[in-house]
Image (cartoon, rainbow, N blue to C red):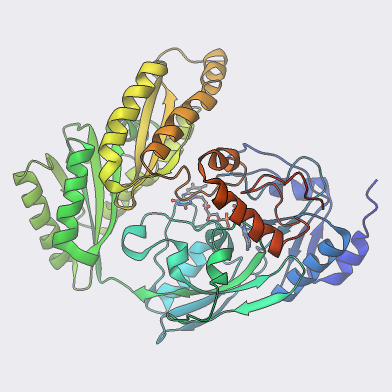
Length: 480
Ligand SMILES: Cc1cc2nc3c(=O)[nH]c(=O)nc-3n(C[C@H](O)[C@H](O)[C@H](O)COP(=O)(O)OP(=O)(O)OC[C@H]3O[C@@H](n4cnc5c(N)ncnc54)[C@H](O)[C@@H]3O)c2cc1C
């Protein structure tokens, strides 16, 4: 029987409090359906002051809190554990864009505003908010900042951290910190903002943010380019950066296997080039002048690339519809992989210079050790971020084969992540640690780094109530 005074919690804030199992179920399973937990209740406060009241109640009764935005995270960070002891704190009702300062090029929005709403509000004011990812219709600004989300325009505009100037945060003790500064320069002490960004709800709750805006480009053109190898793709990136400068806003890599999966599983998908190539690059130019200027710049780049044999063929978008359909080939890869069956996913970052050698050596090691799999490799090459995924090789399928494939996961992860660590890379580029990569990350981090992280956690959240067990394992000495 639950002896917690939920009536007092109900009275403490305005918004919704769900305790009904049916109403709560959507909040208790993650986007991929990989984790399902239990909770005493789901609180959906209306304002930052309401969030503070909820956290004060949780502190008083030592109730763990799992913050949740759009629940699109891919590392299990927004799902409570199975104990049923935690409260899920959903931020989706904090959904107001508070103000836009067009001169300062900033927008202030509450944590539950979806990324799509934020982009639309910026566009309505004649500005660009450049963070862009396939989950943007559902994911929230609070979740984007809590995971330091990346996406397809990091190359030019940076990830969520680089787009954030100020935060409003509720501490685990229920104090409201107003750090909503729209300043590009502010050297007045420890960077608390940066501590909360990427902390995955383990240090406090983000309730609002001031974010940077950019000028809207006058034209955007995409090119889908056949390249012979990852080495050639990297040389094309260097050439594109030289010729297009800051106009180069995305540079994505995908293998022919990825394109084949999209063609097979997405009805509208069409190959843009007549001959297959082992690898493709999708690049995007944003131009301050017009379409003709952008197209001429891309044509010049591609002519130079063809002459140097960095590319073998290319298609350039000539309309918004073509621009969107070229991008869909990249954005639909995850969905096509899901439709194909089970996948072992890796979201890794490497120094750009080491990517070709990493792919060659790790592909070969995987093929030697796990002959029953094949690689499905794509990602944000311009950022050194690969989705280095592993699927079953073509052949017989069925529940027995699927179970045998899933049983390979730990061994495949170890091989891939050891190779990433050996190259000075990261085992989580943009999806965070959550519970998925928590323990593996601890294997690769220096002890002193883990100790500093634990010290920060203990200082800000001494009772370990904020999203316990995410990012860092629960300390044996920690008690709620
Ligand atoms: C189809 C698809 C494509 C994706 N593509 C990308 C991509 O390209 N790049 C990328 O980086 N990610 C991508 N993601 C992952 C996901 O969309 C991002 O991690 C996103 O930032 C999560 O936002 P959310 O609001 O859904 O957060 P949630 O999933 O609800 O939460 C994620 C984490 O943040 C914490 N949290 C949420 N809100 C707050 C808050 N207000 N205060 C404190 N902590 C909070 C949660 O506790 C949890 O630990 C993709 C996901 C999907 C499903």
